[in-house]
Amino acid sequence: MNARIEAAAGFLLQSPPGEVNDVFADVRTIIGDDAALETGILPALEQYNTEQLVVVDLNGKSVLISGASKLASSPGEEERHLDPRQGLSFLFDHMRVAASDTKPIETDPDTETIRSELDKLLEAYVSNHYNDGVCATYALPDSKYPAPEPVAAAAPAAPAAPEPEAAKDDEEESAPAPVEEGEESKGDAADEVEGEEAKMEVEEPKEDAVEEPEKADVVPEEATPAPTTVPGIKSRIFGLYLVGNKYNPSNYWTGRWRSVYSADLDAKTLTGTVKINIHYYEQGNVQLSTTHAISVPLPSDATATQIIALIKTAEQETQNKLAESYAVLSDDVFRGLRRALPKTRSKLDWGKISAYRLGTELGGGQSVEA
Image 1: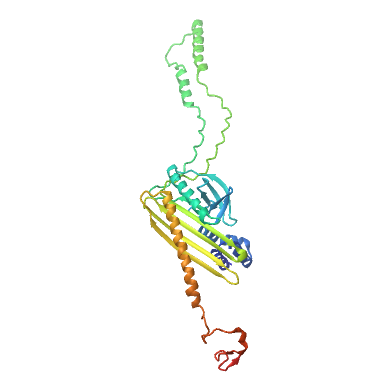
Image 2 (image 1 turned 120 degrees about the vertical axis):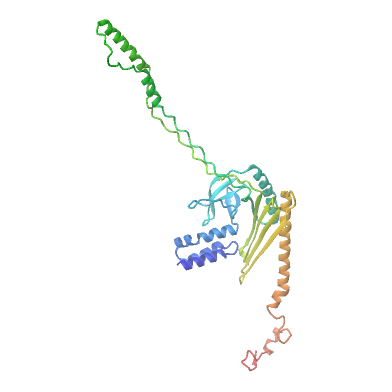
């Protein structure tokens, strides 16, 4: 079973654009155990969705699932992703391709200003050049700016308890001094009256002494749970991700264009990769898979407009090289797959096919009439 699930995971990772559900339905029939299949292929689905820049709906907006959108989490925690455009984090179900449990995030003001400007220009570029294109811009981790630690909400202060020691000290100070042995006691009536008055005077401070307050039933306030937020990250490195999907199953073809760029404003570099996958399966099965690496320097004090212009130029060059490859493929490669003419160096006249004889090689050394 494990070997078959590993093979199924491999098939899913090789799924052509827009056909992962069809591949999943096929391998599901082969495995025959839905519980084991879902558990076994979940890591493969996570890898596929992240690498292929799968698009998910979040509050009516199209959001990318990518390596940059995945938030760091502790072992055992559910996987959360980031949508910087809406300022939200969310849970993502790789099996059902669904987002849920959105929460607000914190951002660094300076970093967010640059990121949002890049994102607006990138979104305009993608809408002009890609059908149903989706893009996102992320602030990537920068070693020069360590990520801040998350700040937990302060717990409500507990009510102060009374200090019993202070009351005890007051009682000791107000208590009469004990009569030492050897002192004469006065037994006449006047002395007894004076003794009673003295006794009453001694008892008066006890009435004024600090008494312990009655313990009232204290109802603790319900603590407001601290919101789970993502600390704002300060960075000068930005990731620009875009994907363009085109599915036409009625005509037996699908295609996907993926671009991933990293703009380092301090190092003055723009690096990226363009990956194109096309599947044509009408009466056959032909796939195109190509990768083009891009690395260009950024001008000093590069603006967001200049960065997007460099991306546009790089992708135009990629498309031109792809068109040149198609021409070479048609003129040279395909012609090398078969002869333009048969061995007789003359075209076959299909109207006179009955008059032709097959070669002796096919007839086992003897001439055979067609």
